[in-house]
Amino acid sequence: MSDSLDYDLIVIGAGSGGVRLARMSAGRGARVAVVESRYLGGTCVNVGCVPKKLFVYGAHVRDELEDAAGYGWNLPMDSVSFDWPTLVANKNTEIERLNGIYGRLLENADVTIIEGTASIKNPNTVVVGDKEYTTEHITVATGSWPVIPDIPGKECILTSNEMFYLPQLPKQAVVWGGGYIAVEFAGILAGLGVETTLLYRGDLFLRGFDEDVRRFTEQEMRKKGVRLEFGVTIESVEPENSHYRVKLSNGDTMDTGLVMAATGRRALVDGLGLTELGIELNASGHVVVDDYFQTSVPSVTALGDVIGTPQLTPVALAQAMVLSRRMFGDGEGEMDYTAIPTAVFCQPNIGTVGLTEEEAREAGHTLRIYRSEFRPMKYVLSGRDERCLMKLVVDDPTDKVLGAHMVGPDAGEITQGLAVAIKAGATKAQFDSTMGIHPTSAEEFVTMREPVA
Ligand code: NDP
Image (tube, rainbow, N blue to C red; front, side, top):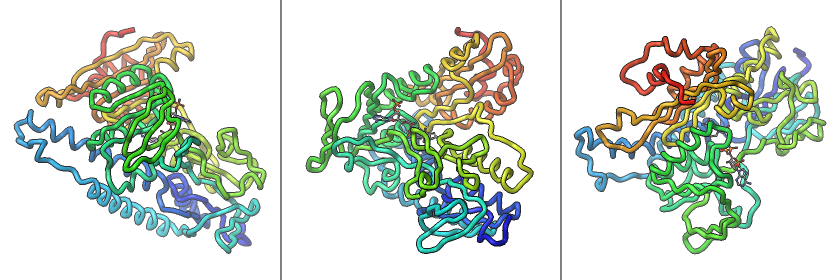
């Protein structure tokens, strides 16, 4: 650490990874500043995980209301109303509270917050507005931003960023894409009473997830009234009076009140001056780093969404811990990207950890597959036609559980525990010898006796 420089570390971007890195590093005695041009907390807190989950809860209330009758509650659905501005306003209050917490966390850790847009002038200088700050280390933690394909009428299309602040809900909506964000928003909109169509260019959405999970989710989303159209994409969008006319690749047109693109996210590196500095970006535009987050310029590191590793908050947090320890701690530790659990908060939720059946077969494993489908107990009295899927992918010779997958209520909550077992290398015999918690859906994961394949 050099006293002739203003800081030991300047972090560009106060999202999950950047804030964690700043705090951890300051805790190790480093003089740290964070530069942020928008909001504290980044995508996750402001226009991602947190508000999305609040909207998912909001959308799910409808199911709870409908299910109430089976339990003897008299709540006629025609007397129930939903007010979108209330949900958005309450969500905004919560996000502001979290922004405040992030600010206090940084201040209490003695991290300087610099508001503005940063660019890197040279390997040890960051410029923000008309000020220059010198530093030993610079970390780029600027995250990612939604991409809208370049089609006529692109300017009429919203992304998840705007959806969180939509003034009013339309009667109909088209969601374009077949990844995490598309299925989550399709579920939110449909749950809140919007006639929702999801358009996906491939044969089946959620590419990369286990095939059974994809098919099961398709079936359950259709049952919930989401119109799913695969093998089709949007060619143009045109405003027409109070709606939008959407032209599709199959020659059809659709009229809708809103078009949302959930067609992926790109690394946010605009104006940083990375290429001018000789920092390499890969073909997808992500910053190229080595296993220790080092870019091609020795004093500059990068982490989180901007480097193209799984775009998940816990991944960015773990990267920040490794990097901080490397820069200002004992230098030990490295990232382990195996068995990262993840949940998709569509309705019902998906929870997944480890290998899909397809990945395991491709890797040459001889497998036993355990699969169970059932109606969750909660829905028996209400008569809801919603089912749950659980699946274990087991390596036959070693009995090791390679992957666990679920579609159903609380899949994310249940999968977190399974992730510990899978990370620890648990065998199917150990799953079998684990007592179930009765009556739960989760106990099915320790009671699947006969392989289906
Ligand atoms: P994804 O990369 O997951 O999905 C993008 C989707 O858009 C894919 O279905 C893709 O199709 C489609 N697509 C891409 N380009 C085009 C195009 N030009 N025309 C038509 N369709 C296109 O991105 P998301 O935006 O959904 O999410 C980004 C990331 O954010 C996720 O990967 C995830 O890591 C993270 N995230 C995590 C969440 C969670 O943990 N619950 C929630 C939300 C986001 P194809 O499959 O054919 O490539």
